[in-house]
Each structure stands twice: as C-alpha cells, then as structure tokens.
Length: 324
Image (tube, rainbow, N blue to C red; front, side, top):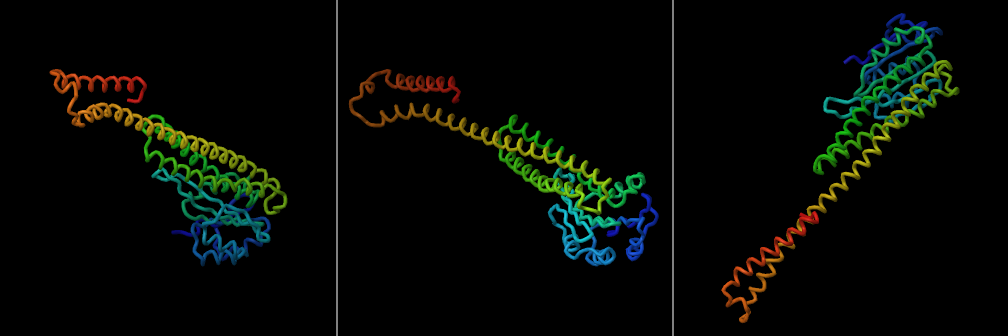
C-alpha cells in the first residue's frame, strides 16, 4: 500500500512539480509556493520524517499516528491541527467511519487518512482545474477537502432516513416483533455516531472563519461558511431523524402493549366460556343423593343443552364487544 498518495508543490494555483519528502524543506523556503501532501495510514517512521520536514508538534504527530480521535481543531504554534471523521455506506448498508487529519501551515497542507475514507485525488484534480481559486493557497485546498468530507454525510443521512421510513412501515403494517425493535435501536446507534461526528464541525468552521487564525487568508475564510451551513443542515437532519425515531420507538412499544392486551382479553374471554361447563360439572361431581334431574328422563340432554347455550351466549357477547 502506497503511504504517500501525493506530494506536490504549487505556485500561482498550478502544480509545478511532484517532489520527494526529503526535498520539502527546500520548497518551504519559497515564499510564493505551497506544498500539498496526501498520506494514507502512514507508518510511524514516515510521520517522523514528515514531522522533521515541517516542524510539527509531537502531540499532533502522536494523534495522527494513533487515530481514533474526536473531531477537533488545535493550534500548535504556527501550525493548525484538525481532525474530521469521514463516513460512507458500505455494501451491507451500514456506516463505515474513518478519520482525516490535517496539518495546516503558512505554506503547506498535509492530509492523513485513516480507516474507511474515499481518496481525495478527485478533490485535488478539481482544485488543479481551478488555478484561479487554488492560488489562494493551502487554505483553499483545506476547504476543498473538508467540503468533500462534509458532503459525504448527505447520502449517509439520506440512507438512514430511508431506513427510518422502512421501519415506520414495518411498525404500522406488520405485527410488532423483536426484529423491528432491534432495528430501531441499531438505527438509533448509527444516528448517534453521525451526530458525534458532525456536531463538532460547527465549532471547527467557526474557528476557521475567525480572524485570529492568520494561516487562513481572509478571502478564503468566507468559503468555510459554506461548510458551516452544510454542517448545520446535516445536524438538523440528524436531529429530526432522531426525533422521528424516538416517536417510532414509542409507537412500536404502544402497539406491542396493545397486542399483548388483545391476547389477554382473548384468554380472559375463553376462560369465561370454559368456566360455564366447569361450574355445571362441578355441581354434578358433588355426589348429592337428592338432585331433581337425576331421575328425570331428559335431565342429561337438558344439562348439556344448557351448557352449550350459555357458552354460545357468552361467546356472542364477547365477540360483539371485540374481545374475541
């Protein structure tokens, strides 16, 4: 696996050369150029080499190597360290999360991908096709990659909303089942993961649009407001989906309770019907010596007919009331 996906120098928005890692320090001395490096799950040795070339902080390098970080933005002297979580739907219709770490300096951008994440080669190609925008420097390159990551959340949330619609149809069109409840909880868990990944983006974009971050040019800061708007919209979509899912869960529990109540009523109805022959048979089981119908020719048919008539009457009454 190629750990260094791309390593290039740019001037006036155009790629002027592909460079080696040991040549980076020379390019950084050029005031009118910036370096854009893309790494994929780099080894500790490679990160150490990158750290040496760019003068990155030890704590940031440690986070970039270990991954499994929460989304955040931190300043280390003249370098900004940003962590974003990526998401995409896999073939099993579940969400695969990954991470992308950014090191942003005065004239460089380093992206480090971990886990499930699409390549940013297309993003780089789009930027290179717009030199009038890429000439804004590493700030615009950072915006382009972040915008691509945030846009990947829209199909993820759409897929979760579609799954929510399917769950709602199951709840109201099929018998309540354990499988439906498990599906609801799985969907709640995935929505919570998306919420944890997207919610910090709002604060990160706010930081990048402030004037105290000198590494992002003022003319580039406006672009991050677009990412901010997308992050707010995704957060609202996730919150709405979670609210609907909570309502669906309550409805599922209510239908289960109603179903259980219906079963209980049926048991109670049949128990009342069976109580009639049990009661009559109990009288005859007492072995009394003097019972008028014992010497009556039609005593047995009469008792049998009485039992059947009472059972039918009770069945009719329960049937009419909806218990059976």
